[in-house]
Amino acid sequence: MKKISHFVAGIFLGLLLAWLLGLFDPASISAIEPSIPKAAAPGAPKPVITTVSATHANVVMPTAPAVPAHGPDPASAKAIPKTPAANSDFSQVALPSQQRKAATNNLRMLGSAAPQYMVDHGVTSASYHDLVGTETDDYIRSITPASDEDYTDIIIFQAQTQISISAESFGTITYNL
Figure 1: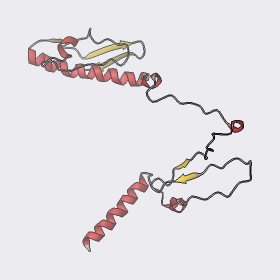
Figure 2: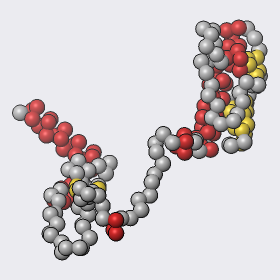
Figure 3: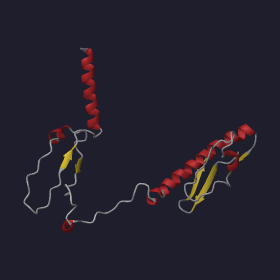
């Protein structure tokens, strides 16, 4: 009996949480059954049929009308705008805010590895070439530039409090060590 009450309480709390997060609307359960459209007059435009998902009852997705086997009627054909493909060059271009975040992360990695390098090697500076590479004693495997910035000239000194990088696409970024 105790297990059943815990199960019911768990179900209730799960539904309450889903409702609070906006994933479930108890009032829309009655709208789950789709309506069946009546036959239209010949030559009338075909209605768009909507379906409702039981898991996301508040999301309505239109479905395309059926296309005859011989193809769409050329007289009623409309131009469908094309969207860029997921792997096109357009989707590979990073926005300046994304470039700034990536460049800041690169500076963070260099700024975090430099003090450890200085302690390990008993020196007061660390250059990009000391920190980045595929050798076993390098601290960072690789740095991928976010845009057109160049990290190879960076040297971090022990008393230094900031490092900066500049690029035409996003300007100058300064990272506090």
